[in-house]
Length: 249
Image (cartoon, rainbow, N blue to C red):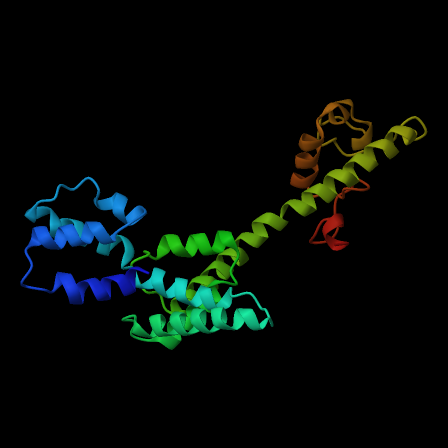
C-alpha cells in the first residue's frame, strides 16, 4: 500500500538529510514496481528530478478519499467464510484496513464512514452526477450527499408534470379515433337540418359530416377540437370547465 510505503520511505530515505537527492532517487526507483515504477521511469537519475518524481507519486497515490474508500470497501466486501483457514485472512484484512483508516488525516472519520456507506447505495447514474460535482481530492460530508440527493429529488418532481402531460393527449387521440369510426357509420343515417357553422369549413352541417375535417390528420383534428373546447366523444361544445376526457380521468 502506498500509505505504508510512503511512511517507511519518508522515515528512512526522504527525511534523511545525510542522503543526496540522487541517492534518494536511486532508492525510490529501486523500491517501486508496476504502475508506480512506470510513472517515474522517464525521469533521468538526476538531482533535480527527485523532488518532481516524489511529488508526482504523492499526487497520484496520496488521495485521502481514495484510500479511505479502499480501506472501508476491503471490510465491506470481505467474503463470509466460517472456515478456520480463513480466520487469519479475516484478522489480517480487518485489522490492517481499520488501522490504516484510523491513520488517515480525516477530520471527522465517523462522518466520512456514514457518507461512504450511504454513497454505496446510490444508483450509478446518480453517483456519477455526484462525483462530477465533487472533486476526487475533496472530502465530501454526509450532509453534502443528503443535500445533493434532496436537490435531485426536487428536480425530478419538477420534471414529472412535463412527462405526465402527454397522457391526456394520448387518451384524447384514442377517443377521437373511436369517434371517427362511429360517425362514419351514422353519417348516411342522419338527415340534414339547420346547424351552426362548422368550425372546420364554416358551412352549415354537423362537424362529423365535414369532408375537410374528416380529411385532416388526427393531430390537426385534435388541435381543432381542443381549441374550440368540444367533447372528444360527441364533438359538441363542452358545457363544463373541463373537457370530457379530463372529467373522466
